[in-house]
Amino acid sequence: MAGCCAACLVAMLTVVSIVGRTFWSWPIPGDVELTQFGIALCIALCLPWCQLQRGNIIVDFFTQRSGPRTKRWLDGVGSLLLAVMVGLLAWRSGAGALAVGEANETTMILGLPMWVSYAALAPGLALTSLIALLQVFTGVEVRE
Figure 1: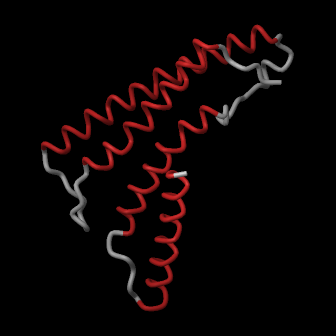
Figure 2: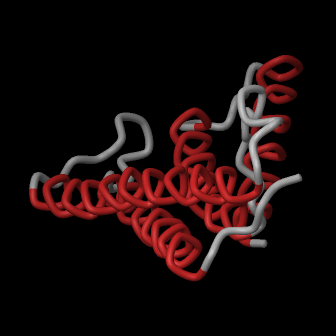
């Protein structure tokens, strides 16, 4: 829900900024920075739900005629690879937040601390990794 709210807020921000720029030559200062932060947060917050619901894209062209056991094995391997990849992204996002925080980096227009955007990504990515690992070890549903 938080990810969806972030996406809605970014959409409203974009509309208001475009309308302000078009009709009154008054865009929202830092609208691009806020959009980048908001969409990154939205993605990180929606990824765990997507993985939990098995909403990721599956290309099953080559496995249409495979048996349930083969599909279960391939789904397990896919979930394991996703868990590793997203786990690495979570780790590096956390490490990046610390490094950027120590350097006191800020955005160019609004002067917002950059470490916040990195730190906001890490929990959602870590949760996605955990969900994928649980799916590997507790059994994976066979897609029909």
